[in-house]
Image (cartoon, rainbow, N blue to C red; front, side):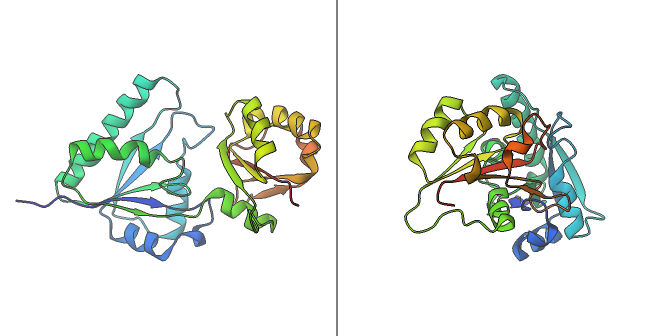
Length: 241
């Protein structure tokens, strides 16, 4: 009886291929199948930024690339159907004894499609071992680039998706010393208005494409009003700066 292959979730970091861990590189080199998340939304991860990073780090020649579609939608039924289909596809490879490495931006256990996929892979391939290779997150790269510590001493940090309700963000600004807003591009002007009203605009900075050659750090965030921001933009508000 053939044993199941191992299923890996591999974080490839925020963009710089040199930020892949040694373990991530070794797993990708040894995996027979590289599972690649793709989106139908070309403005985000549709071109699979994770794959571009991996290709810059190692030679994927000769490996099977398994494309998995994760649509950009809030339709729960559509999302579940896509994740189930992707899980079945991965399980088919695992059940044939092949090792599958699912690559994801940042860390597999932090706002990643890997966590949504995993339950379905386990459903279709319950015997397959599962291992996760942590990756460097975009906010870690952002504060490193800006030379601003994320937290010091007893400071409290909150990390939230930018789609958060604006009134919730207002409350979080009062309760935490540092607030990290992920992928803030679509509601930036509204967040900016809030920060200005609370006198916190000079305590914030925005980093786009952290770890990429086109990386950009902006400390004068008011200069960004009305501009089209990159999808991969992170806004960090640190009241102690």
